[in-house]
Amino acid sequence: MKDTDIKRLLYTHLLCIFSIILSVFIPSLFLENFSILETHLTWLCICSGFVTAVNLVLYLVVKPNTSSKRSSLSHKVTRFLKCCIYFLMSCFSFHVIFVLYGAPLIELALETFLFAVILSAFTTVPCLCLLGPNLKAWLRVFSRNGVTSIWENSLQITTISSFVGAWLGALPIPLDWERPWQMTVERKRSICRSLHVPCMGLSTVKR
Image 1 (cartoon, rainbow, N blue to C red):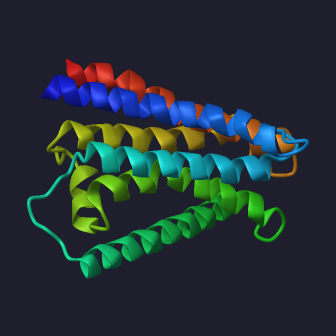
Image 2: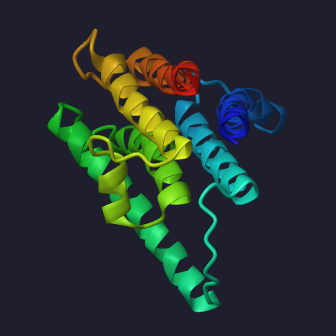
Image 3: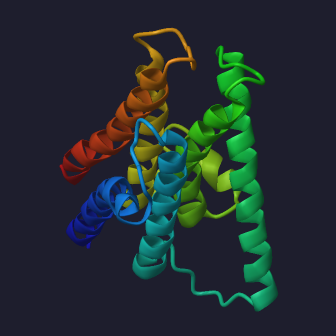
């Protein structure tokens, strides 16, 4: 059973990486003059949408946290609305953190917010898909020795790696949003780091 879960996790991460690759090439077929550097705002929106959609579909198909209890339609709707609120709160919280770390408060606010959205897509969305809007479960998973399954272990690796990757992306330079290569290239490096480290960590989980 553990080997099967590891394979599913590996396929999940590979599909997430593949979705990022698709977000680079597919829009160029429908949008004129599409480029990551020139139209980086559009790419951030598309990439966030691709990653979120892939996570939702994969967790609905795999269902790693299946429960024997049957929930009513109203409960599902309430749960979905809570997840949406948590996601929006995550985006605004990250935006505030970026501003506190030196991002302009008013100038290029859209770039900062979209970076917060894409970071939320890599951190908050998987947590909501696996744990739901349950803060106690979140605290348990990210506390010491609080993991109870390999899926939660993978969630730890993915989330922490995303934060570390976002921090390392801005480590070599001050947080300066006025240069396009700092707004796009460094963010793409953060995304790549947040995906490579979890895939590498799966081998340690298997051991």
